[in-house]
Structure formats: C-alpha cells, structure tokens
Amino acid sequence: ILPKSRGGLNTWTNLITSCVKCNSKKGSMLLKECNMTLHKKPFVPSYSYFLSKSELKDDWKVYFKGTK
Image 1 (cartoon, rainbow, N blue to C red):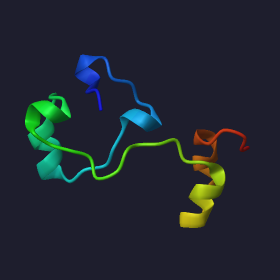
Image 2 (cartoon, helix red, strand yellow):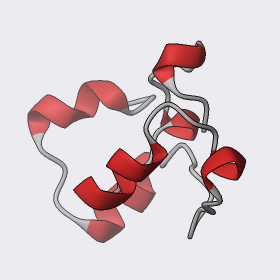
Image 3 (cartoon, rainbow, N blue to C red):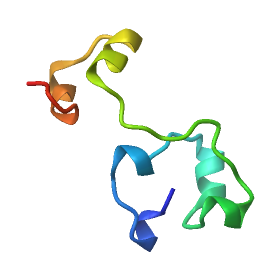
Image 4 (cartoon, rainbow, N blue to C red):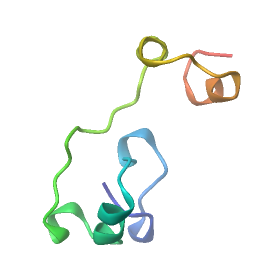
C-alpha cells in the first residue's frame, strides 16, 4: 500500500479500509515502516463477487468493469 503522498494511486489494489486509530498510526508511512501488516491482500472485486456479498447499488456500477 503506497500512500498518496508517496505517489500511490486510488486503485482497488492500493486501497484498504482501516479504523481511525490504525489509519492515524500508519499516516504516510509504508506498512513495514510502521510495523503493520495487512489482514487480506487488496484485490479488484468482480461483479459476481460483489453481488454475492451485498446488493449492488446503481451508482456503484461504474466502478466495476463490464457493468452499466
């Protein structure tokens, strides 16, 4: 996960969710610099994966390839 301040992009594979405490701890550091690890590796979710987890809202469809 490359922080935006270090050239990181807003892509599925470079974004993770975190609580306020962990996000503040990480700040602009790399994970190894703040001695943190990921619970799961970020990935680009497929349309079917997302549907299996929840109902897809119309305004979210633009974020999934092959949807309209």
